[in-house]
Length: 467
Image 1 (cartoon, rainbow, N blue to C red):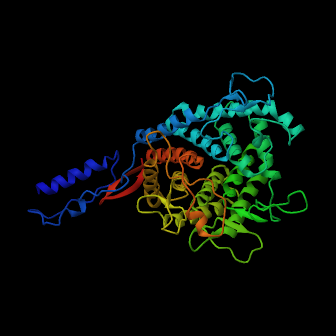
Image 2: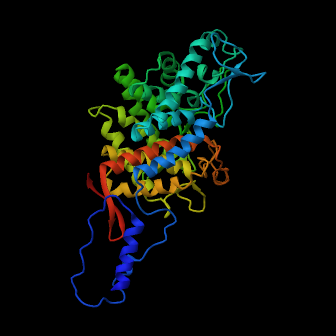
Image 3: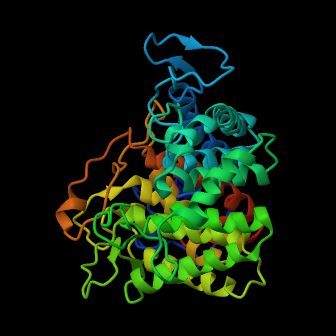
């Protein structure tokens, strides 16, 4: 029995859970134990921790990422010729540019990062995260006020530090940034977002090319009598469910006009009708209107953008909206499909259903966030999906190195109809796509573990009831 007690002690020590689920009943037999009596309690060498992180431990991961990003994404202006700092800008100086850092302050990836900083600030109570976003939003608002008149007057030749935002040409230029502006405004930010939202909100809802049925698309008219090839005429990118649809829904809340809610629901359902495989429970990456056949490449990060779009839409869509249940049902179908492909160590593959493609971090971080958010909001059962999100978080947290960089992120990726394109995309710590999702994921895991009891039952990790 001494050996049995030692095994039990080892098991309890290695779990270090703050709240244990109901334990299995003690054995009824008395006397000496059989040799196999305690084998189920043997310590298992999991590659990633098989437990839930305490909130402080999650925050320590987020803090490393924050410190790296705060140091390497300066909210400062310099002279583009002399590189001298510009302390104060009173007029539109064509020589002024944003001080270069590791990442761009006006990319769609940084729209997600601003949202992630807001979420981390709310979950941890650490104002540094919130201030990271508001400080950079304020800079963008100031630059918009100074440079927008000149860009409007001469869109081709004018110079501005944030011209891609002031004169957007694609959803990537406007959608995710607009989402972060509206989320910050809803959270009480004192930045004046009037001009910012006017630019990006109008582009997403009124100017981006659409198919005849209203679905957001790429490869529309080129203004010269032909069509753009992105990569083909009338192409749907699954990414655009996120690049446009949350902003459309948020514009409904911002304006009080229900037409935006209707449009957001329509986008989710029309993308899904064309691109969701109900047998597999996952989406193809690219679809071209008019093609008879579509080779299905189920790229992981694009599936992340899709499920993230749905949780963001449901966050603001009135529950009595006629499309609410349809969006929630689509979210549930997608989550169920994703669950069936999670790797044993918590991550997902670059091509979800091809196990010989590499395990990818940014998609896993997005799934972690979206699934934990869906559990917290009651769209998904905590018992079924809480362990899945927790395992994914532990895997993602292990990808943050000592400097706060995130490893294993696929670089920017277009779309293709052949597998080699996706299999051989490089990964880099400078791929911006994983930083916002990790912040969002950590924040939502903190909230989930505050809300629900968790622990081991017969060595299996479970969520059991509210706290």
